[in-house]
Length: 211
Length: 218
Image (cartoon, rainbow over all chains, first blue to last red):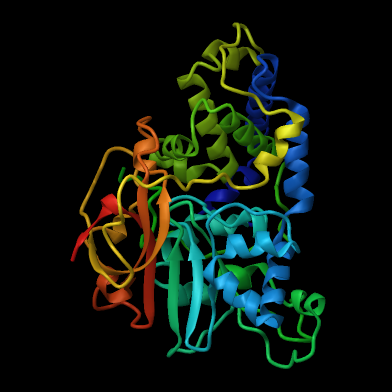
């Protein structure tokens, strides 16, 4: 992480700056705790949840289910939040999740140009690059160059659709199922579903290929 | 507001650098900041739209220079001052020096699950939706000093309504402290050419989720 244009790296490059931020966080948490506005034990629990419970594995299971169950897939594309919550197979997620399907004719990509909106209840916390200026600025005007940064090439005649998450709707991409996976179980298929394939900066891993 | 946060279409920010096996947090304090943001929002002293707008109002060079969670820290610190939860002398001392003011509620361990699931933003409509899927619409040319979720690149552009997403809290109102003012929300798609001109990738289309006040008949 050496590119000084990468806005989110700044703090990690300067030890003194980092410790100053750390001190400010500690001071604010102390004051808010002493005044009874927050409880550090609750913060511990929230941090633990985001570090250990949520992550792309949740979305990967949803995608794998959609690949093997056409009725689930149709329902997911109709209303993703309702479908996931009513299936009973996944943790409860928040409102207004929208799943968009990649097809041979259309590749979908998700961004929040204004801040960092991200479907964290199915994908976990967003990676630094998703929240960074290079991605937020460029994907809406030149998505193929963004894909090139990820080493991904999409055929020139495939439509590219960029979904800018400008409201409290949240988008996840339903990637195309890799060929050569007939008869695979949901658990096996879920292993092929990468985080980036559900944002649209990647495609699902091929069988046998490293993710 | 026309701030640097509204980045869609800007040039010059360089290459995207994905990090392999990226951890949820890069430092312990980042997780604390996330927890503070959730815990403070729970008190209903301010809201998510004010949280975003406060980041947008940071000096542009600060917004671009600091890391993501540092920006969150600056936002909640400013709001804690603005709403009287903390005072400057307390920040300097690192301890409470004044009595706490009353807040609507505080997050207990039994409430922590609220922080794990996104809150609901759907609201009872005040009127029938003005547009329907398939309608041609034009986004308004607005340049408010306040908070808006209509990005600059998508203003004064003709597009097609693809879906009605329900009736939601209106961030432009909420961030101004003027209540929910629920508005219909639509996914509106634009051709790359409409947004970026003749040089645009012909295979590109871009959509935003637009609140009804952003739209007029094409």
